[in-house]
Amino acid sequence: MKPTSPLQRLLPASAWLRSYQRGWLADDVTAGIITAVLLIPQGMAYALLAGLPPEVGLYASIVPPIVYALLGTSRPLSVGPVSVAALLVANALGAAGLAPGDPAYLSDALLLTAMTGAILLIMAALRLGILVNFLGHPVLSGFTSGAAVLIIISQLKNLTGLPLPTAGSSLDMLGHAFAHLSELHMATALLGVGSIAILLLLKTPLTHLLQELGFNSRTAGLASRTGPLALVAAATALVAALGLDTAGIAIVGEIPAGLPSPSLGFVDPQRALDLLPAALMIALIGYVESVSVAKMLAYRRRQKIDNNQELIALGAANVAAAATGSMPVAGGFSRSMVNFAAGARTQLATIIAAVLVGVAALFFTPLFYYLPQATLAAIIVVAVAPLFDWQTALKTWRYDRADAAALLITFLGVLVVDIEIGLLLGLAVSIGIFLWRSSRPHIAIVGRIPGTEHFRNVQRHTVETWPELLLLRVDRSLFLPIPRTSRT
Image 1: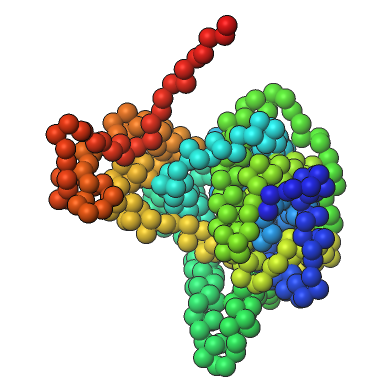
Image 2 (image 1 turned 180 degrees about the vertical axis):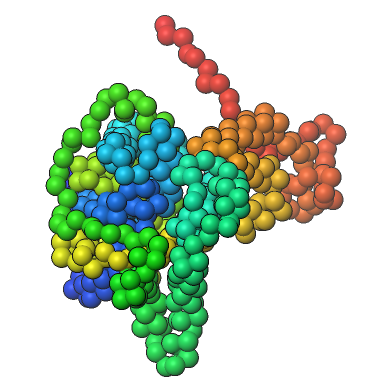
């Protein structure tokens, strides 16, 4: 909702705090608990995707969401670690020659997060939120679909135990996987594939089964959403009880207990220049993803969001993330949908979820020691698979071949060349199509339909025309120079 008073402009949360109703509390508490249950395993999984220690994903789910809750204008948006930003971090640091586990790897990841926040705040100061309009839906769809495939391929190593490179195109990784197929670790593969199957069963099939057994839709949905945490608990207990880590199954290992300590020790101006292109990409994609989800949810509840305030909120959340030792954050689609469906009325649900994740980071991290990385990889795969938007590709191909070309070029660029290059290619094609269409607008000669005041194309309708008049309709926006007036 767009701030109106000075207090709301400074602290948008004051809008829902002043109008908070007692009946909302139960919904916010329930949504906060459900979101936290999803966020704990998902946060660790996305940290793994970024090549970072699992506690970094937990830290990203504590302070940054609270900062957004106070400064953001979307009430149900859930901010935290997201898959695409995690992939961009891994890609940028891998291209820089760093490997997960290196001290410089974590330091550069924190620097990337801080730069992402700073870029978003600069965009807010310059009121550049409108720039995201150039990133059309076909390009964004092609990018997210390509990123989803790339993320799934990148998790083959953790799902199967195959030795795969940490960087490179999807074709390189797939080729490497087939070349080393004989090195498949059967126990890891069984656990990974089994975890994916269980997660899929815990979604729609479990919900339908519980409803057929007499449970209401709310209870059935709650049981389905707690599935990932239940799987984490079961897989961890299985590995610990049978000693499967000694059989070659990779586990998370020791996770430091406690909350993150604020620090700016990662600041390095020289490294900042090297990482600037990646930070720009993370900021742009994170903002577009967040605003797209926020607008969709706001439309469903007849609410409004302020695009520029979202830049401020996401920028501040990322700066806070860097200062507290965590990875880039944005509004996640699946997590926000869970938060919305669970009945979240305000950002109090996000604050409750963050507090619960903080409690888990303080007291329960030893319980995750035997958590298999194959299970975390399965959580990533199931979470990002819906991002592969083939339906949009088919619809775009039917209605607009030029937009379909932009989508396809972006998708193939992400998979074959590089994730950043793919997006830039799609953006260049999209802008080129826009300029081409603007320079060649469709112009129709129109006439009046007899007995009406409606004018239609003479080639498609039976209309009245006049020899002394030529009526034209330009089916594109016109861009005309503004005449300069001379001063006297």
